[in-house]
Image 1 (spheres, helix red, strand yellow):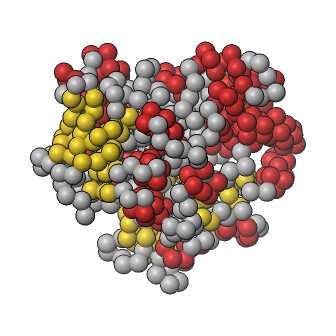
Image 2 (image 1 turned 135 degrees about the vertical axis):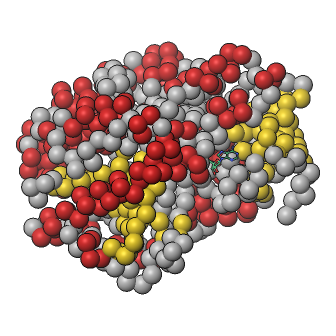
Length: 539
Ligand SMILES: Cc1cc2nc3c(=O)[nH]c(=O)nc-3n(C[C@H](O)[C@H](O)[C@H](O)COP(=O)(O)OP(=O)(O)OC[C@H]3O[C@@H](n4cnc5c(N)ncnc54)[C@H](O)[C@@H]3O)c2cc1C
């Protein structure tokens, strides 16, 4: 245990997975790093909690689907399998269940996905193959490496991309909005709806030009949804174990009051209970820009232009999630599985989505703070990992995108959420009638509950900041702060408000570790070549 007034090489605020990735890399380079968090458990969105009324029933209250997690460079470098994070990837990834009993399916095996598309439209199955083939090298050689590196200024990036055919295709496709891309390339309304659903999981506004490449990139990506054995918190525990092994310290239930600045340098953190932790080299924030630059820094230490930009940082309207969590005697048994038994083994099941025309309606409801007709998705984790419930029992959940400010005020969720949870359960029972008898108990969580537990997710935005053209890449979180450095020496940003944004990718922390290592002259043999070099080498 470290003395409260020990000096550290660096201090990190917020113990989300990005912060822990940064801390473990720097610890392995010999730095003595402290990470502090207001919560009682480290890991932020890697939370698995036991239902207090039903011992042994575990629920993943934030993230569950970890895309290609065991292919992440930091998973390998930090030896997280050895630290206990084991991943399961059910080969039937996603099923979109339709009222008529049909389903649109995504499999790890691409040919099975294409066969499912073909049952709806031959032309769309051909488009799927065509875009998968065209984007495979783009994902492998451009988009993948870009997400794992500090970003380039947009003009420099554009000039490099324009030099190759793949780069030009990426720029042309990006110029569209996801909606334009899907409507231009695919014809069947169910396939159009399914593709836009996946775009929606990345929270990008489907009308926003500049993001048309998202869908072909998803089609080409070999990385599929995975889940962590024992629940998402197993990844947090593995990261904490890697941090401890690297000599790092964690202080939980420790709330920062301010970042200390001396002589134009970030030199430490003072906590709400008056402790002062000093940092010889740096302070990194895994929080959002309003927290970092406005709440935690004296006005005198932040130029007005930075305060204004931090204040203007915006959040995703359509990101907030509402969750219905069930304790069960048996897993959901879908009616549609009578004709297609594999459906009971799909990792993710989507219900309520029938037609692409539902999207404008959903967006409008969000804009007006009203509950749209339900489109929901979720899983029964215990089908794949029995350890998340008592022997023979199960847990399951459904998520729905619902407006944060219900009827103009997020607090309305506190009295609305039971009613809405019941209506989701009714829809679920229509598809899986056994839930009427097999449900032991259930509870809900609103986007306001999310924000209460993770205040960096302002407005319940689980990606910690909108993906809009002003807030991506080199300009995320805002112009001038897109290289993980703050406005004073020794101040860094390492959370999802930085490139490439939210979700459990670890890349904001991984990229920040590259920048801090370079600035401090630390050995970083794990770091990839710079993105400039990699794009310049493309043929
Ligand atoms: C309901 C829900 C479902 C999700 N599902 C998925 C999913 O399936 N797949 C996926 O990839 N992602 C999912 N996400 C998103 C994912 O959880 C986040 O994008 C991710 O956790 C962000 O990681 P982070 O390290 O940047 O920060 P976080 O995980 O948000 O961690 C931030 C940390 O900072 C701490 N903190 C906040 N404010 C302060 C403060 N003032 N002082 C000190 N500490 C503070 C918090 O306690 C927390 O520990 C989901 C999120 C939610 C809410």
